[in-house]
Image 1 (tube, rainbow, N blue to C red):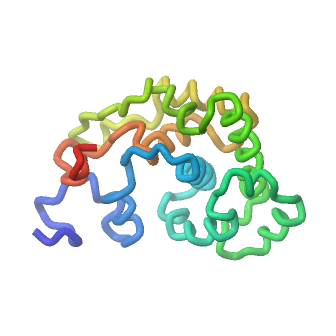
Image 2 (cartoon, rainbow, N blue to C red):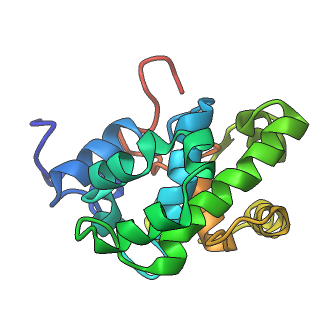
Amino acid sequence: MNKDNHTETESACRLWAIKDPLLLEYHDHEWCRISHDDRHIFEMLCLEGQSTGLSWRTIINKRHAYKEAFFDFDINQCAAMSDDYLESLMENKELIRNRNKIFSVRKNAIAAQKIIAQYGSLDAYVWSYTDGRQIIGNWKTSAEMPAETEISRRMSRDFKKSGMAFVGPVITYSFMQAIGMVNDHLIDCRFRFDDSGN
């Protein structure tokens, strides 16, 4: 079977990504893969927030521009961005030019700094919601997959209390998938686990 093309035996898990090379790469090698890297965790939190009301395809195709505009999502550099700098990003046609979304990256970075000061790392904080364990979904179809869970609702409430923006319960569930807190690859997906079993 050609790994890069859809066939009749391909899992439906890849259908949302199959027509876009960047989405396919994301599905196959990043989505639901465990991450404990604060920079990457912050990046995915922000990118998921940028996707509010939009398709993930739109965001993944602008990911490079976001990484350039927001210092590769370095938390301290994002927290230190000035109003003038953030306003200048409103002229960047490669970004979603929504002022609230652009300014939310700084808000989220400042909140992340406070979390890191209290818990030692963003990683330690977010993974505490699952006691450090990955939640494995056993879905046969995408229709079975939840859009939000009690954990994502609790995370959303806590994130909002910390000062973060664009962190509703559906976004936080997508974020949990993005950093591998949950593994929602369908049970017949050949990318459900990587070579290490994660």
